[in-house]
Amino acid sequence: MSLKTFLRLCLAPLVAVVVAFFLLPMVRLILVGATGPLGLSAYAAILLEPRYRATLFNTVVLAAAVTAATIAIATVAGLFLQRHRFPGRALLVALLTFPLAFPGVVVGFMIILLAGRQGLIGSVTAALGGERLVFAYSIEGLFLGYLYFSIPRVILTIMAAVEKLDPSLEEAARALGAGPWAVHRDVILPALKPAFLASGAVAFATAMGAFGTAFTLATNIDVLPMLIYTEFTLSANIATAAALSVGLGLVAWAALATARSVAGRTVAAAG
Amino acid sequence: MRREKAHRAARASGSLASLRRRLVFAGQLLFTLAVASFLVVPAFLSILAGVTANYFVGIRSGVTLQWVVQVLTLYGDTIMRSLVIALATLAATLLVGVPAAYALYRRGGRLSRLIEEVITLPLAIPGLAIALALLLTYGGIPEFRRSWLFILVGHVVFTLPFMVRSVIAVLAAIDVKLLDESAASLGASAWRRFRDVIVPNAQPGILAGALMVVTLSLGEFNLTWMLHTPLTKTLPVGLADSYASMRLEIASAYTLVFFVMIVPLLVAMQWIAGRGRPNGERR
Image 1 (tube, rainbow over the protein chains, first blue to last red):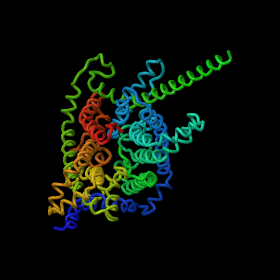
Image 2 (cartoon, one colour):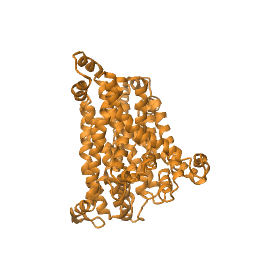
Image 3 (cartoon, one colour):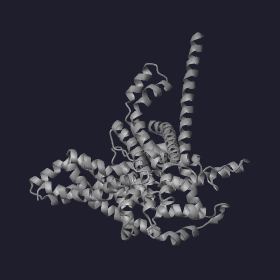
Image 4 (cartoon, rainbow over the protein chains, first blue to last red):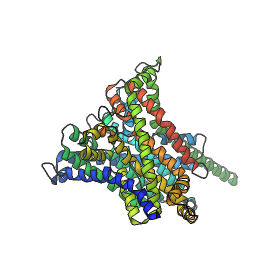
């Protein structure tokens, strides 16, 4: 058997699996999206129908806010952890990255334990004489949940980027009289831009599509994954659910594709 | 006299700068600790709640394993099913993914790039959309729809890119083409080269990919929630169920069981990632 034939045999199962269980279903999803009473304009309805547009807007704003907050937090912590060596540092890094593999539902439960009806924040505010503060099941709770699963991913990317910074650039800036703020503003942060874009896109795409956390927390929050789920299961509005899923997939894919063309490597969403 | 004054001023500004540095350090440390506690405290609370007799009363109500026992009786089947699906997913990604990674790397070229691109798409597209697509395409076949194999298919599509890319990364790092060609020049057949040269050399990538695949499959919810039936619930599906309908202690004990399953895998992954770096430093 020639090498060429052998390599073809090696590839055949993969191609079969991907065509049968990914490509064909995705084509079907796109087609079903156009089978509703609206036909192809079901796709336009995502933007034109006020309810769908409002949900899409909510989801994009929430995902963007989570991305911005995560990058800010992860940059401060990541710069600090990469620049200083102190006892317990390795443990701190491990603690900051261990939720990486938590499924969205578990993250939702973590937020319930923090801000739910029997949550820590509620107990503390009640003990301090105030009202029992409960916000797990609101948009603030969802924000916190998305923050929870974004921080570990973004911190890892930023720490790796900080490690690769050229220290001589900072030294040069300092020798030229730049203060700590100026060095950060003009040297360090611009150099980290690719890492911000790459990890930001992952955080954004993940937050857009995150279903598990929203499912655990959202009794009444309008985000796109929940809308798709309710359209599909409760309203049996299959064509709309399909059209919305295609739209969601496109937004998430576009965010990651943009990031990859900037950062030059494949980035993945999860959660 | 004047010199002494200048000296004192310089010393004061020097100690001011070092005080400032220490304050900045303390501020950043506090901030980082706060972020870490945001992540760790709820996980700790859930472990605590899972072994507390009555969480509302607090830990003084006693430490108990009764909730864990209840979880094992109530949800034992979901735990077993998740383990079976994770191992089946692993077997499928090994059988399909490892030879494919070798072929994609060895062939190179535009078509291989395209295939790699396509199999990576499930990482960018939300699980909900993939699940919906699978339901619309194969949901009409009742025997398939009702079986756990339906969930398996979703998990394989979702985890396959991790295995393939992890193996390709190792193959690229060790210049496997040279090894392959030297083995061929000694007269080894393509199959023997794959078995005796490629697979042993790709082992670190296979191991890292395998850990990733099992971890992801055990925790997968977005696809599985749509694909499961009442008779094919997995652990994360059961978790969502317990979060919605069970008392906090049971939900916590269930989460604790999940942590016990997942944490060794995470530790192994970090250990492997650390071993791959020259100074043993974790990323």
